[in-house]
Image (cartoon, rainbow, N blue to C red):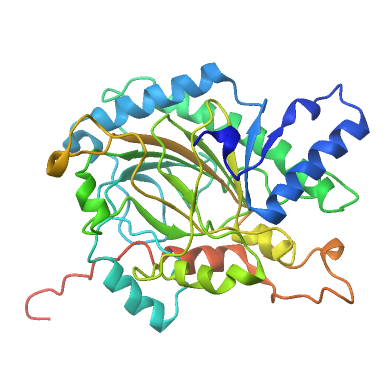
Length: 368
């Protein structure tokens, strides 16, 4: 399957330029929002991030993950779930759709019995004192910090454009509606590496790449290499909602229906996050997705069959921590009552994060 034959729409942002007419910009906005209503995922081409910059970003990512573990551990992910920065080694994070209640805590413990075979490195704004970056020493990977800092803000520029088009498409009078709450300091740049693993381990579920989940924030922008493996959960419709709820708890007996999101060179794969779904009163869909066995595999057969290494770069776009998420006026009326109570972004983020990272128990001093 190619991107052109995928069920995920392609939206060309060439029509969202400074020289574009109001009609052209409105057309791009409508196409974007229609994709977000029906699928929740969309390919965006002709965006603000250049192919040269993307090639450099993937090059730096490979250099990072090619380092010895001892070198990567010079910038470790802090213990617990409150700070999400630095290097996460395979098995540290367990991605799921757990929401934080007692039942989900039990589910998370069961899910952790099967590790996610991936490693990641998280980067944020240098101005975010609540989420301080964990940088490698400069001598370990000279130039890495400088490039990634610039790349972070280049991605933010692309995100601002997407949020403006989304605001226009959902009927807000001001296309800059989301700009004040999204200055960029609460976003997260993630470098992801899925190392080769026996294909049989993924097939028999003794290991996973990344389980079915929705994203927490406003929107996510994803850049993929040519390996593949990303899948979108059931398209949201009344007929499939029951199947979707099973996917959210990763039911291994009823995994539901997933569609592939094959790589499209230099495109952004953009998806709606939970906050945007709440803002839009479920008009836009935060779709469950997962990473599984890629379609391209190394040249082995039988039990020796191995997956290829996969690299991807997601950029999670979120508002300031104290932002209150409540239904937008353009997304509710007599026929569309408000579905969600207001929430504070930091509260929701910490609730979701608590299900993915464990906190080591404090050691008790002898004789205490």
